[in-house]
Length: 308
Ligand code: ADP
Image (tube, rainbow, N blue to C red; front, side):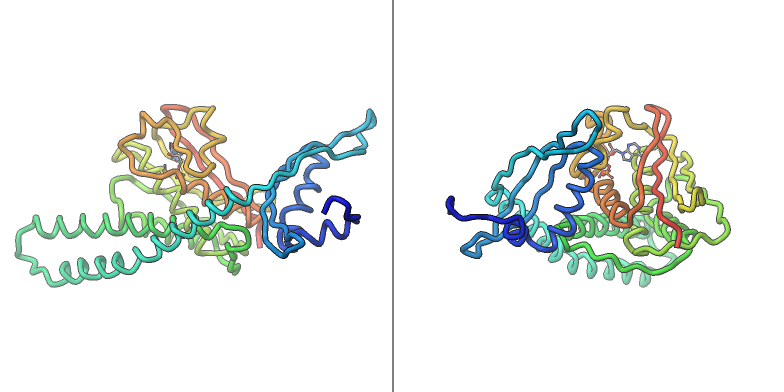
C-alpha cells in the first residue's frame, strides 16, 4: 500500500534471493563501470504472488566521476514473461517428446544397415546412410531446442570436470566426420591443455562451430581447428573459407534467433539458436566467445576458457 514505510531491507526481501545474488547485485556492480543497468528479476508481492519486473537506469556521476545517484524505471512485465515461459515450456515438452521416436528411428536404420547383404542394390545402402545422417541432424536440432528451454534462470547447471581440451576437440571432429564428410577437417593435437569445465556443453560449442563452418562454406573446402594457450587461457578456434559475416551482423549473430544475411543463406537450414546457446554456455564458464570474419573470404570463430 502507498502509505507503507519501506526500508531498503524490506525492498530487498521482496526480490527472489537467487535473482538478487545472480542478477540484481551483479548488474548494479557492473553499472558502476558501464554507467547504466538493465535486468529482469522476480519479486514477491505482499499477497505472496510472484511477479516479474524489468529495471533499467543510469548511474549519475559528479565531475570527479564519483557516482552519486541511480535513476531509472521499474516496469511490471509479468504478463509477457508468463507468455514467454509458456512458450519455452512448450518447446521443452515438444522437443523432449520428439527425442524418443527419433532414437528408435535411428536404431531401426542402423539395424537395417547391418542386415543389408553386401551384394544388394548399392542404392539401398546409400539411401540408408543418408537417412541415418538426416536423423542425426534432426536429433542435434531437437537437442538444441531442449537446451534453449533450459536457459531459464537457474536451470542451466554446469557439471564441471577437469579434461584435456585436445581430446574433446578430437572427439567432436570424429563425430562431425560421421555426419558430414564434405569438408576437410584439419586439426593438430598439441600438449595437453587442461580446463575445468562442463565437458558435454563445451563439446556442443565446438560441434556447433564445426557444423556452422561446414554449413556456410563450399563443399570440398577445408576447415581448420586449433587448440592453444595464451595468457593463461585455453583457446579453441574454427576457421573456414566460406561466405563470411558482414561487420554489422558480427555482434548480432550471438543473439537468439538471429540469422545473418538471410538472402545468401536461405538455402541453409537453421534457426539461429546455435551461437546463442554457445555464447550462454561460454559466458557461464566465465570465458569469452568471438568471431573475426571478412565477407566473402571466411570466418574464424573462437572461445577462451580459464585454464584449470
Ligand atoms: P543457424 O546456423 O542455425 O542459423 P547459429 O546461431 O549457429 O544458427 O548462427 C547464426 C548465424 O550466424 C547464421 O544464420 C549465419 O548467418 C551466421 N554464421 C554462423 N557461423 C557462420 C560461419 N562459419 N560463416 C558464416 N556465417 C556464419
